[in-house]
Image 1 (cartoon, rainbow, N blue to C red):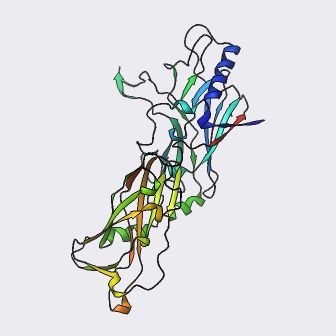
Image 2: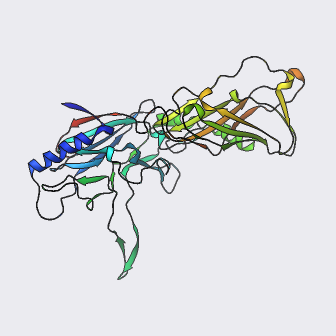
Image 3: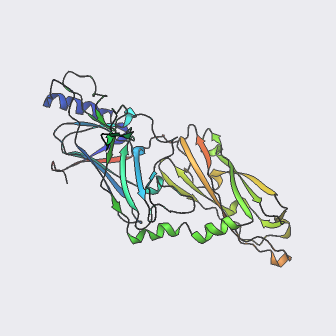
Length: 373
């Protein structure tokens, strides 16, 4: 039987779980045993969302901070000696457990949801982490505190300091307790690692190494100068600058519609691809930039991106790509032609918005086998 539950309306489920735990009974003495929860992340190919599931394979109820922002992906890319961690920016990663996301999982219950891993491994211009052969180790929760190992009697001894809240998993309240034991829990869950197959080459191709190299060697540089702190989507803007970093004058045909944006939203990626005017530009549309010269524009993002892109309160990272295709030959102009990609994003903050910050996502509360897979 599958029961549908909303992650963001889990207070009722928490209360129900507490009552169930009290009815079943729990040890009266000492701290409750740490629950046996299992994290599993499954990739289903580059054309479909990945699957995340957390299941309670133990014998006691558990309180889970069922907050998708807590997911982290440890990536060991081919040719790299050390793994790198993909996670949401610190501004979006929760510092403590959000009470709205607390969910009681009874023994044999689990939760599932789908997600786009590129939200966590965000890369302007394409992927270089989620590529064929990359080894992915998912983690869910807050990183554990660690101490450097010490040498004792000629042996290297690992130190495990006492962990403190917040915890991703807690034992459900024992009979007579008003709340879960905040001092005993799991900081994070770790899933079995898996490698990405060759079909993920299409993600790595989106980076277009040739374009990236061309952008680095280009006489022009595209800078995301400033984002905005906007009340709502309609007021969100970004300021960008196209600058001539060469020692020679450059002629450019630049319009804001020639700039495409890639936006990392609180809940996923959105591409903004405004269609430029197809009419041929006249001579006055070309601009001559001397060495160090620049053009700066401020764009209202609602005019360039799909409606609702910036509809929720939160922090957004905006990257840009400028494609110059007009040569100006019919006007005897030798204009710059090529692609320039921004190196750093602009930050846009939406303070209120028309949608809630924690989107109402339906999770599936499912019955699972008591035996750990």
